[in-house]
Amino acid sequence: MKKGILATKLGMTQIFNEDGSLVPVTVLQAGPCVVTQIKTVDNDGYSAVQVGFVDKKERIVNKDKTGKKEIIHRHGVNKAMKGHFEKAGVSCKRYVREFKFENAEEYTLGSEIKADIFAAGDKIDASAVSKGKGFQGAIKRHGQHRGPMAHGSKFHRHQGSNGACSSPSRVFKGKGMPGHMGCVKVTVQNLEVVRVDAEKNLLLVKGAVPGPKKALVTIKETVKTVAN
Image (cartoon, rainbow, N blue to C red; front, top):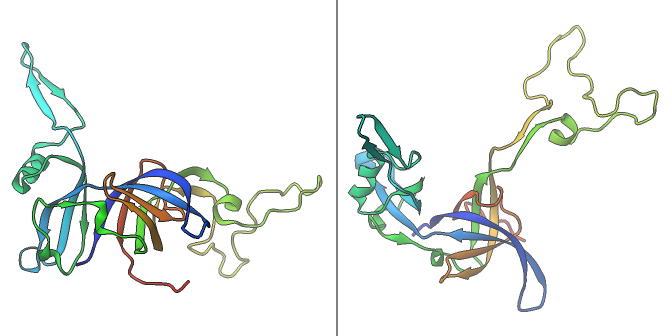
């Protein structure tokens, strides 16, 4: 059975292995997730498992004495999503994601997925939205070289020549230029699970995982294994 789970990033720390070596790890609050829908080739055209993570309040609409609608929990779950969760027999969830699995029929609707589906030594792929850095120059964004730092240079951290001469007389697409940096989906492959705390649903992953603290992280079995 292929495995996948949703998690939130708690931060980084370090632990010691049995041989006494220090290992930097990222602590992830993995699950518990619930299966909210099972998609099959016959009904949906592809096989996938939809899971929900983190409880969320319902959006409640009341009317006051003047007849105006008063919305309580404005950012709660709307009626459409509420019906979707009730059909699965689970509570309303904040995050809903899909895992495309060929063996989706092996999962049960409404069943829980916890951190114990992974074990120490497993290889995983972690995906999350990276930290946003705002508008940055070409040196920080793309690692381009700076100009001379002498007083007469007048060219220090500015970008160099952008276009060619009379031919082709334009700037090619994809050229590294200043702009918005970060806040994009990043996937790090072949990370190792160092330790699993089944009681607290914690995964300790070796190395860094994309995203800031409290970021939503999607964890799957690795698609490839790189020899160390």
